[in-house]
Amino acid sequence: MTVKAIRIHKIGGPEVLQFEDVEVGSPKAGEVRIRHHAIGLNFIDIYFRTGLYPAPQLPFIPGSEAAGEVVALGSGVTQLEVGDRVAYCTGMGAYTQERVIEARHLVKLPKAISYEQGAAMMLKGLTAQYLLRTTFRVKKGDVILVHAAAGGVGLLLCQWAFALGATVIGTVSSPAKAKLARKAGARHVIDYSKEDFVEQVKKITKGAKCDVVYDGVGKATFLGSLDCLKPLGTMVTFGNASGAVDPISPSLLTQKGSLFLTRPTLANHVATHEDLVKRSRELFKAVASGIIKIDMHSRVPLADAAKAQIALAERATTAATVLIP
Image 1 (cartoon, helix red, strand yellow):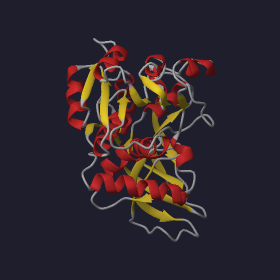
Image 2 (cartoon, helix red, strand yellow):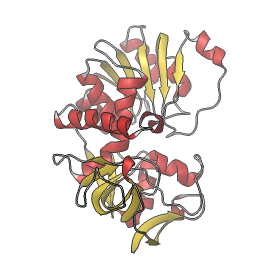
Image 3 (cartoon, rainbow, N blue to C red):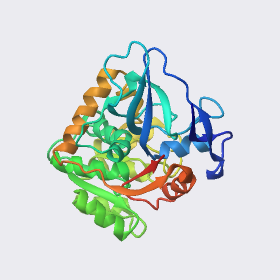
Image 4 (cartoon, rainbow, N blue to C red):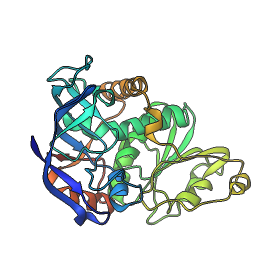
């Protein structure tokens, strides 16, 4: 059957996002066809569009997360039924009205969570889950620094870390974003467009600095982030919103206090269906209990995906944006 989708035929700017007809086949063994109700918008979509991350082939359909309903089953699929509400955050191909996907990549969406919330929370929410519960297991009394604290992942990190008993320091780029970060649980907020965040962290912590830095900004903040860590602190660089981090010598980590440095990705943390289900359940529980709230910045028609990516790249958004097919 023919559906509408965004396809990329060449690497480049937002103009390469083409809204066009694509064919969706029938699901094969182990696959299902789903009809999307909402599609998540993430920086990784831009990374593939620009070539920062190599695309598997050209043309390709971007997008890594969505939520919708199962409309057809391939043979051997027993854990799902037609009509089930599902969500996912794996691979590419989400910028489309319908798609075929392997059943092992899907999790059932609880009735209490809307399609829009599901599309907005899977990639960002599971990222927050593994960052806080695996990469560095945040506990009561920890002091953490969250860059882009009013962004999609940043707001979730602030809320969840606050609930875990951590002292959260957040960086933002405007007074409006500062207000959002504080509401999400950041005890201290630094406007890095006006203040030196390294000096402010030292001031806030009275020179003790932080146990961990969560940095999804990348190049612009990386070196400064290292200076915000106490000896034996952990530097977590998990995104490149300002560009890829330049290579460093391992000896720099020694000089700054025998620091730990990691560059994790979600794919390694949900490599098996069992891992995906386990982490998703913890995320759904956190949402259902009110520990974290999935706030929407905007809802944009799929045909206008280019406009949505421009706003995201210019850091003109807060919370989450979803594309509506």
